[in-house]
Image 1 (cartoon, helix red, strand yellow):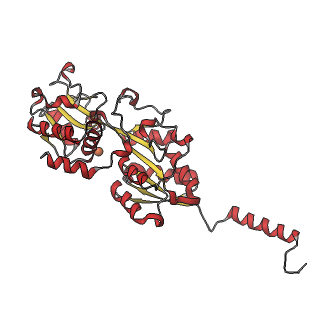
Image 2 (image 1 turned 90 degrees about the vertical axis):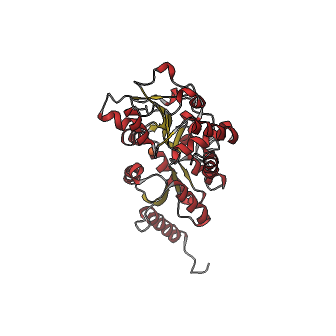
Image 3 (image 1 turned 135 degrees about the vertical axis):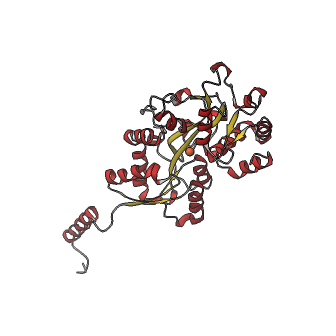
Length: 336
Ligand SMILES: [Fe+2]
């Protein structure tokens, strides 16, 4: 036997030394990279906690969801992103359609209602907020509230409804309506709203403020704005009204997926997603961000209609991505 080959004893010793080195490997800390379409104020504190709890260094690049999705699409196989976190599910859908997301394990997916995750298991919702009709409780008796958003074009609401056509969540609502009603009916609704004197506001908060003043009777908004007003003033005369099964009560979700390029970092990426679905993290979304927790075991805050009682339109939230088509429609209807 040539002498340069190690003996079995030498070989075993070398293997053990190598194994020990791999186990303690201080030179190669575990590290993953997240591209986040959620603002640092909404998710940063949780990612810092995840880093400490999991012993994984987490690099985060922040931007808006569409920009971050576009960056990943452009970087393709060379992207540094292991996880994509999106403020809106449509941006996750855009990556899913390009086969850039891996299927998540059932144990992760099943923590969240199937309405709030990818039907193909490619992303999972982390937190939610809803579209809702807010109304002035002194000006609108409960029995007069509209059964659906299509009722808002009736003469009795002329000049009394506020909306924010330039706002991203409003545009997501219009995209949802396109999926349930089709483009033609959606455009007809937009035109009818405009000719019924719908009043433009720059964003959601001014709508809620105007409702409080009685400047308008109803407003198409996101649910969490109202809590800012009622927190300081329990008598603020505005309340939520949920329609049934139409875009007016759409649940908008933030969510996360693991990139196919994550490779050997996938296990750590999944641990971070599990962390974001843990009860303390879900409670954080509810308490600090005024959002809905999405895992079954965590209750919505007491001042909120439980998600189980809301009847959002039956659509695949991955398909809320066609912002361009929605902007075209808003322009064509003369709303933007
Ligand atoms: Fe908002």
